[in-house]
Image (tube, rainbow, N blue to C red; front, top):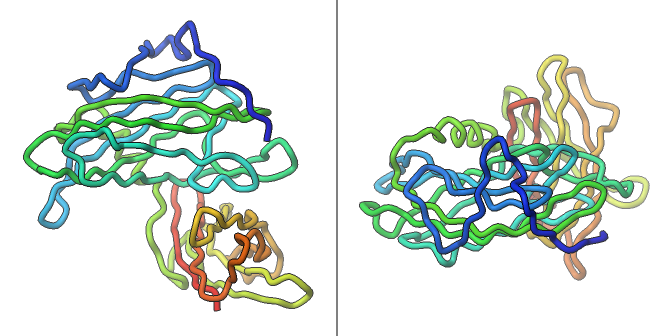
Length: 287
């Protein structure tokens, strides 16, 4: 995949929303950080109200990425090509852990005959932050590396900082909507739609492949994604296949793209089924 150097922008990318360049040393007592932008994309941190979870407290926020029309960025598993985002929160204060959540992605052509997985337009990746001291605010400092892609993929970076107080604000609805699009954990055979009803491995006719039957909403379409147990697995993107019963859509993918020396036996695959605004995620262990 061809890469080109990241070019600094002289003018803001999205003038209508007043983007402002910032540095990682700055943290703002607000519910948004200034945008860090270039010619193709922009990123910022946003804050939402905290929630009590068990005996503790979780601060909520998000990484908000905007892209120019025609540009895309990638999911945690980019598909046949692309680069997933990486997050460095090491310089943060009063932070025990940060969990990055991923809303249900899209599939699209990667421009070279393959299929990529990610987001167009804009996306908010929710953040769930466990503080060291639940009675104090959290200062998030993030070094973000991601890719903005049109016909070529261009590396993008952002240095972002924001104080999370846990108070409700204007971004609560935005973060809540992004959280609602994160695939919910489910089990194979669950009722409802979308739902992964059955998964099997077959070896007839050559290379082993995985067959997945997914329940779809009436008249609706389903997209399926497959991930291996570690990021170095490069499973093919599942494709629609015939032979499913009424009310189901069948997908198939070759058991290919394993890391050198890896064997499929006992590996835990993650399957994500997406239908419109709803998505589920199930685990399937290969035998």
